[in-house]
Image (cartoon, rainbow, N blue to C red; front, side, top):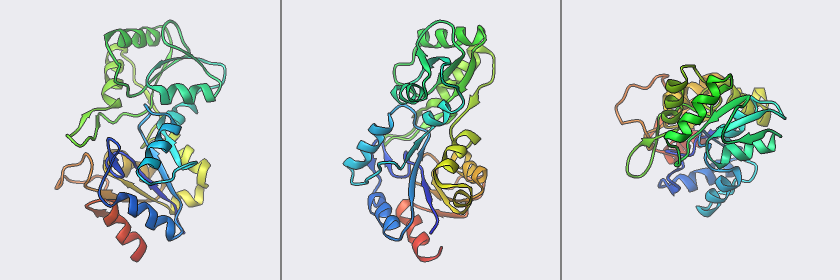
Length: 253
């Protein structure tokens, strides 16, 4: 049986509201013997918060959530001083890795992730630290985030502001980049990662991540991509939603 790497926002839920059929689809995959990992670029929430939110909609997820915050922490070394321009998920990941988290002043690195308290003062602190020599790391570069009322600015929009203010490019940890792929491989192994299926709603992120892993990509139209858009990379499978993907996975693949 192959593992299924499942995005959360736009695939399982929208702002924690389950997309119809998604809860049952996850249960079907697991009943068929597939390991399901939730691979998300959402760095704002802690892993425990993600697990709890999935549990509230009927999806047990203990040990099955991988976040871009965790991938970002792997780019840093224990003992480094890091300015967090990000939410609690990033702070947790840095703390767990033994990194000193600060919110102002000089630092070895600045980590930028989605957070609703981002403001001009935070932008100034982040840019100033980078101008003084800190590395600039983004948890992800998705410029939008899907909600039931349509897309809103995502972590990539905040990162773009810091990049513009500091005048330097950022290293990005989450999908579709190698740090997140390393996190997945560490969890399931290289061979299983290549044999798996990435289910996502954004080809530029989830589709390219499938190519980074060397696995198949299943695209759903329940998230940020408007129906009818040209998909690049071209998915191996597409469906209206996760339930439709699972119909194909359990019967054809």
